[in-house]
Length: 614
Image (tube, rainbow, N blue to C red; front, side, top):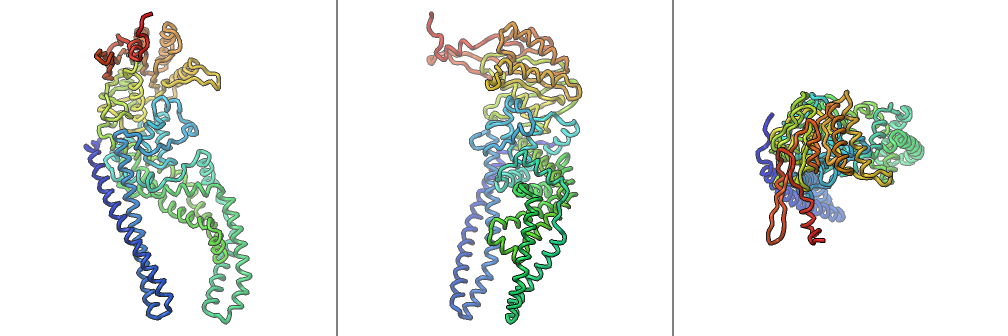
């Protein structure tokens, strides 16, 4: 696969400087044009009040010049807005690169429970939250890319062919910063600011798309068209033939009430046919810019290219554009006086209902599929953005062989800043093997567990991993790391942990799914040492019998000796005694064999506990 950019930081710094300069220049120009618009408007009004023929001619010229100035002002404002959006996108990317969590835009994590995703694993591995993997991947629309990337990360892995197709796209797209930053800009900084649709709203929307089109009465549509023509004729008579004004006014007294009645029936139809879907459709209008970006991008290999082809074949962007324009027209209902005038003069709601019915009949059934395609494309872009912003990360090898289960060089935790990151190897050589990690408190056991887990999830999703080399068997990741009691339901910590472990064991026994890669932190620590060793052995025997492999951590070095097929490794600490007292330091480096030291008593003494003899 192609290599990632060598210096993403320098690239982003240069782009940020250029965007800031462009935003400043466009802003200055926009302010000047704004003053010019005001000046021409004042001149035109002043001249029109003189009633002098020369002044009238000058005023007409002023108005004629006002139009192109106004158009130029809109163009420059748009250019300034785009530049400001790019500035924000570059700053967010730089914050993600350095893991400056305070400067990264607020996370918009989808409702994982509503999506039926593994919230326990998300909590265990910091997939969701203020400092989380999904926050690093939050570069798309929350209702599309945000939902899809969460599903890819937390769901069981797809077929190997699908993973390979995603990897091919991500490896290519991570080398296209123009596309990646444009996606972040249109999704986060110039659009997508409306609240994300809820799961219930999306279900309502899909039901509307799939339902048969409820057509407004064709007879009433025809009547509305005829009445519109008559209204135009009446206005023409009033303007061109004043002597027939009385006849025209009499005709208007019959035509306009009927026009308003038909329009009222059309509005009632719109409300019945669309209901609350109208507001949701308006939010989905943000997808137009995203779909256009995907369509216009240079063709890419793998899944992204297939999405581009399908969107082009279905003319999705054009269809969404038409829907967006119709919804823009529908916004006139929020201005009662204008809405009334539009219905009286042209039967506005009648024609709008007819056009929306036509659109639904032609494209309604395709809309959910197009949104799914846009979501897939944005998920690929999110993974590629992660690769671009972390150029040292590699694309992993995902396979379905019995060995190696996980093999990685210089594997690190994706959420730790590169300046503070310590990397370690990971090696589960064959099916049924368990890596048992021992070590003192705060030495890095749980961080290592999460590093392996997050990289495994990224690999299964088709993304890059924080390592210099990484190979993994296609597996279902299952965890028991952060287990909490539930007093509301009368569940103790020990019972909650046993329930989690039971779920992992049950999953491992499934024969119709990929094998389980388990990550268990200090399991059964709520019981005594002898019981814990025996229970741990029983749990692991059942897991291994189901074809699972994995990693566990423990403070009890004797536990590793009681486990068959165990490979012991450990983390340690060093102690320094000086004028400021006893100090411990950690190098967070994984070493072979079980740990031979503990630090609980030393930590207590450092905290001032147990310093005096009794």
